[in-house]
Amino acid sequence: MDPRSKPLALALVLFVWLFSGCQTETPAVPSQPQSARLSEVVGSVQIKNPGQAEFAAAAENAVLLEGGEVRTGDNSRARLDLSTGTIIRLAPNTSFLLTANTETETGLFTRLRLAAGQIWVMLTGGSLEVETPAGTAAVRGSHLMVWIDPLTLNVWVSCFEGECAAANDSGSLDLSTGEGALLYLAGPGETPPPPTAYLLTWEEFQTWASNVPEANALLPDILATLTAFPTPTPTASVTPTPTALLSPNAACTLQLLAPANGTILPASGELVFHWTPQPGAVEYRLQIISINGAVNTFSTANTSLTRYLESLSAAGTYSWQVSALDAHGQVICTAGSFIFTKPATVNETLLPPQTPLPTHDTNTYFTFIEGPLNPVTEFCDQRYFKVIVADSDGVSSVWVGYQVQDYLGTPICSGTLPLSFNNGLWSGNPIIPANPSDQVYWWFAAADNLGNHAASEVYFYQEISVCP
Image 1 (cartoon, rainbow, N blue to C red):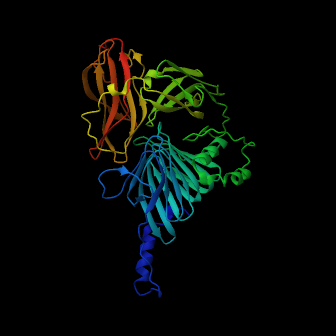
Image 2 (cartoon, rainbow, N blue to C red):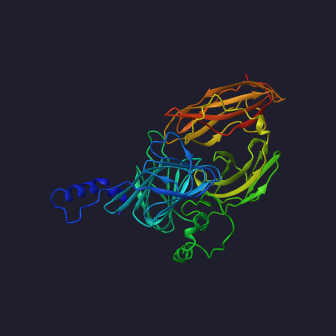
Image 3 (tube, rainbow, N blue to C red):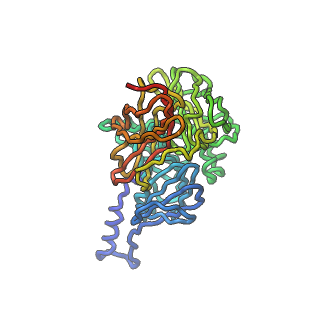
């Protein structure tokens, strides 16, 4: 039965009845909030329990209380164990709030509010719901994955074993082993379409097993019951997000070619992305995901696209994927993700300090970033800034911060420029005051409804003409 049909009020009614003259010899025990424990902490994992003002680094066996929050950073992961034996694994750049974790008359009921990122759930007792910006996923004694696409904020729900469900304001969809659902994020005043069903691919099962060690023992039996796959040949490819996401009834032949997976690149020069054609595609959408989870998106009608390594100023590992779109702008399928690594483009000591921004920690995520990212660019006719900002405390304002340096690297001026909110995007066409040959460093910054501030990574371009 769906856990949403079992409100805590039933437990309270039962409690009152037992203590009003109809009790048995053994009185009932009142419901008590349960805790959960973090383990296998890798990288930057932070926790904030009720009553704590700031996030703090999570240690092994740290206890997460009801109302507590967890967030993971770049290349960071963690495991959360509930008292029933249920395991929740957190991917990098994930943020969630534990809104309920209470014993009821039918067992432990857990609810998470996922703000960003990806989780895998292995339910062994009780019931669990995952709230997202686009809808709700429910676990009914099964293995479930929930992923918020950082570009669109649409939500992918994958049921790897057992019975699951996905729902939004337009309807609900029951899922069983090997089935998934896509929940579209609706804009202000819009009604989303009902959950869209799709079949999981072999690649998605591989990704599940790669990220969830407990799944390896189950995988052979599960695949043996599914007839949708040809006999699989396991590969060593491991990706942090679902791969080869396929729309219903589509045959995906799209494959990434270059740069090859795991390539180590120099700090500067041309970076040519290349992939195979997809039948029925009229457009391809290239997404480059930076080390902090920000997504830069580019569109082309060709099967290759050239960028410049200088536009990726930070050192580290990047991932990239390509989506094929049909004539109606709908995604046919997505191939990815490949990764590549590069050193810093510029001396990072020259990056402008992000002041006067306060240093309060927040759970703010900057995604779908667009702006002047080329190393040498003329933007007078097409200057733009666009970003999606997610924060569980709400977003009150977003702006562009900048610092302009001359060709010798001497700071000239700095400031902030506000952006406007429309249809889920913060955007604008502010003009940063720069002269030819000036070097411009810029970043997105946001304030949440509690007054906290956060900033994205710093980007770079060089002005080659004076804008009117």
